[in-house]
Image 1 (cartoon, rainbow, N blue to C red):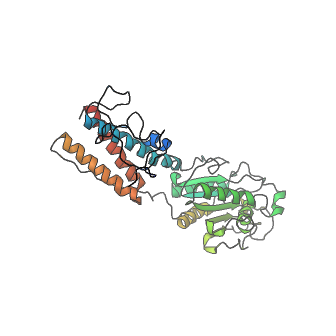
Image 2: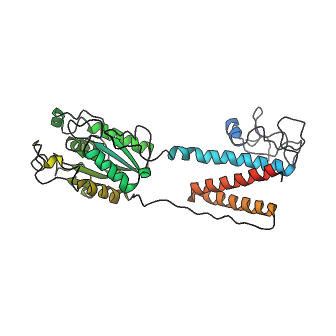
Length: 349
């Protein structure tokens, strides 16, 4: 094969080109080209190439060949661990930061979770969640699905009394935009839309008129909806829970008679029923946790055997899990193997 092909390492890179354990002081074997930035990330220049002729260069390994190779493997695995863990660290920024107040902003804060609840408050309520139905529903959903499984977001729209005349048009586009942002940040999240009174019309508008696909919505829960009984775009009725209390002068009559029943949703059975509906529709509950197990073989014939056995088990676990079955377990195997290598190098083995 022509060594000048694309497999030849270009000049001027920091890819290995000085010394290999089996090609000491000779040209390196053919390897695929690795961009400098990538190479330096995985293999720091101070550790490659592995050298045991200490004193000839300040880029040397310990004097022992075995320690040299172990040190190289350790740094290689550190890079691999970092490459896998870095995106996971972003994803670990999951779970709501909502504290029960009248404002929630998880989507805008980049929080990603299996379930995303977007709520629109009623007329004249403060903040983005309001002070009645919104906080009560959010807390119930967190209790039912688990804080680490939920992101809470309120819709920032005027919510004035006059705004009712717009039938949700003042907040619908904002709710739809938040939903699209959530799906962009967290493609697998289950979207739940909810609203109280004028906020219910905002949810109507988001799906029916603001280009949010009904197929992207896992559940919709509405309280005191002035448009109760009206189709919400192509949203399936099985995804909708529309609460209208007996005697509610808004949803029962389609008018704007604010009766005691219209103000009862935060204290009646509606909140718990709405939260339960969300858990059922999304399939995410506080008791649903992902678990994984791993086992490492051990040996009793001495330190070297134990080290080899653990390393072999760790590598097997890594290779198996990097195939796609469990990234978390892969990180566990890498971490275990790195710890073992740290101990081996430090002990002088």
